[in-house]
Length: 248
Ligand SMILES: Nc1ncnc2c1ncn2[C@@H]1O[C@H](COP(=O)(O)OP(=O)(O)OP(=O)(O)O)[C@@H](O)[C@H]1O
Ligand SMILES: [Mg+2]
Image (cartoon, rainbow, N blue to C red; front, side, top):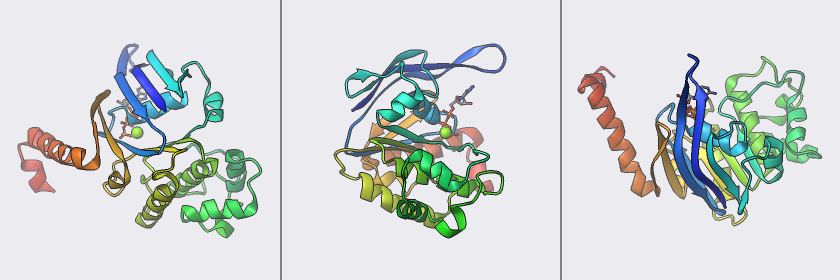
């Protein structure tokens, strides 16, 4: 089990001042479950993923994996312990090809596996294996390669950060099928999917809503869905007294 215990995260706001972007987050992620993290833009979802992965370091609180406090471990050490993260906005590694990157994710990857992972995210291996990861690939292609890399790592805890962002509907439907096949009721694995996609939420065992650095709600899709819908409508009404809805 992965536990976040009272996680606070403070960052500079660019004006020489600091602000808290995570404010006392307590969460547990169990094996055999698929979790969705959702909530408004800027709420702190990606920051939670980065704190788990060790990219950001919390100002207070602990990250505990299978009873061990991993708060002081590096990204590489956490990766070795079975945590993997696919970025919301993946970096472009100049000088590497798609197959180079996949081989870094899974050293010793054979040609057949490489082809399978690329097909899983809707990329034709013949077209993409030798493509450089520079500016020549579209945002959606880079995103799909990032997801293929996460699938290839086959880690105990896989964190997908908005896998749907910039990815076509066909690929996201395929990916949903792969996530169900791989993670649903799999006693060895945990999937955490940061998402705004209403097709992804129903496949998850639990939905976690993060808003303004706080854990706002958690529960099953049935328990949480109406809260999300009501809240969106309510915020719109407050902002524009109903006028904005008519404008759209
Ligand atoms: N390194 C940083 N420095 C300064 N501010 C940051 C940093 N990282 C995140 N933030 C701020 O923290 C808040 C939470 O950001 P985060 O990326 O975690 O949100 P999010 O919930 O993932 O949003 P989205 O749905 O848009 O992806 C935002 O206001 C963001 O601007
Ligand atoms: Mg984000």
